[in-house]
Length: 410
Image 1 (tube, rainbow, N blue to C red):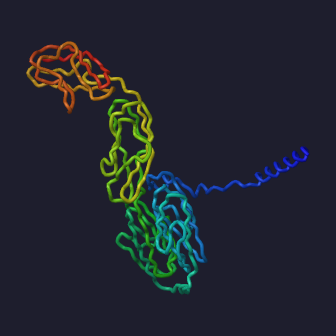
Image 2: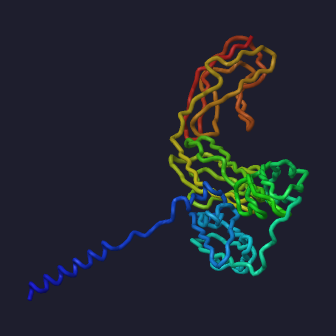
Image 3: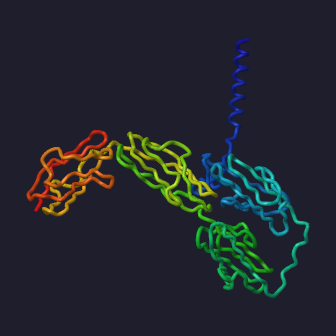
């Protein structure tokens, strides 16, 4: 009986192993279909992470789906990753002989543009069906008018043509013979070229568009702002007790408001703080670090229309040894009866500093001045000669440095 049970157990184990061997590894999205939101578009929010927006097309017709921010051109690219919290606008354009009949999925409906907030992986489907309208008649011979329109959505630019005729700019319409092969060139002045949004190259993101003119045609070029992004990727180290100040700057974006900054993850080193803004497109991290540490934190910027995030780290090292940097062993000389001053500077330690004479004497008529605009020796000397004294500086932690210094009064 025990032998039969053992044989049955071996058979069951063999069947289980065979079943595991026949399982297939789940496929993952193609690397070309998922690009980091930091490389594609710095637009994002404080929700963190990136998620995939997948677009599919159904129906008996054909067309393209494009996105703003750019990334989806389906067409060819139907999947893209965006930063969490990004709002993506999808636009469907039916091909000739087809009609767009509506959206499904991702809270999209109707036939207008669809706004999708990226809070998780989302799938949206666009349905294109064949049009019941008869196809347009074949082009006739003669001349046709090409008109160029521009949508300047945060960016500006010009459109020119080859053969010459369009320079839009000033000339946005021209007539060409039927069958002429025309290339349009979109050149951004500010920002970037977004896409062709109508006409024979609709949905294309290449600034160069070539087609054969067979009817009166309008082509629309869209110019967009540069994505909102940070200029800095790293921040400098600091030292315990030493004044620290560094600016973080941003560029691009389509908003018209002052860029505002906030911490959305992590924390600054102890003793430092960050302004919500410091200038139109920058903020300032400043203060006096109080201990040795490395802090990692994420900064979010908002321009009123777009957001972006970036993670930084600041390392705070040990305090620098306190030392007198000015004057040296010999201060500048003076003249009896004429006003004299000598600035006092130190480095290291933890500011503010306090200065004193701990041995010897200053020239008669001179004294140490402690002021918000700087420490100095000043006054009107009343006697000639060379005077030697011990100049001492102390910091807030009790460190001190002393230097023997001489002043000659002529």
